[in-house]
Length: 236
Image (cartoon, rainbow, N blue to C red; front, side, top):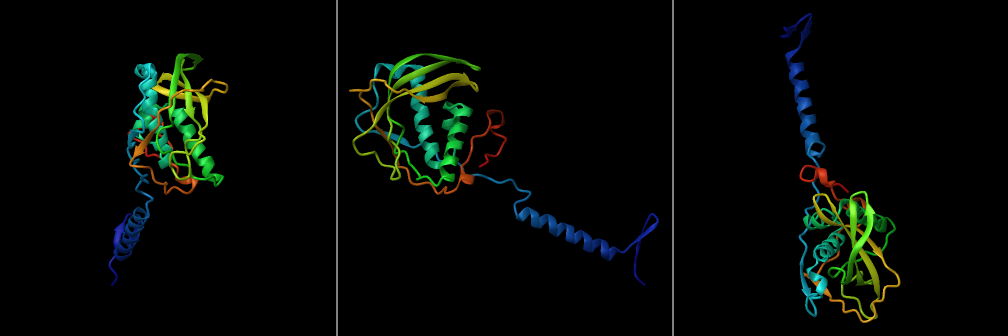
């Protein structure tokens, strides 16, 4: 006689119950192994490399200015994030506002979608500040502009310091008190700025950057919203 278990007004076959439970357990184990339950983890960004200055570090009178000092931290972070195609670097979070950092990630995706050459920064973009002045008002308050001259053709497929002639153009870097600190919030060119004879110091990364393994736009790691950092997983 077949053994049955009585449940309410229905009869259940114990062997059939065990078989069903085994199937369900197999489904759970299988989906977990496939990564459905476990969250996807993204590559941890490499720290910003050391900077070696070819002819000495910048020593102008504006180097002690607080906005210039933040810029000196933001430029290496910006270059390192670009080289890795990973915009979750702690150094970038510390010095660059989320909208500008997200815009950089979007630009990287756009370039990869166009099959554009992978350009590598040999170091932070060389820049010499000439003035620091009030800029425009933003929703976050007064923006302060660091205006100066920078090397334009700095990145290359080889990741080496560009050969002469080097193009030097005017640039404006804007800073605002956002996300709990003073951060870079805008970057625009300044055509017509007289950069003739301006001494621009050049620094390179040590170790030298290597080409990223990122080959498609879906692999670019976007920054996480400030309110979700420490809890959210970075996403392409």
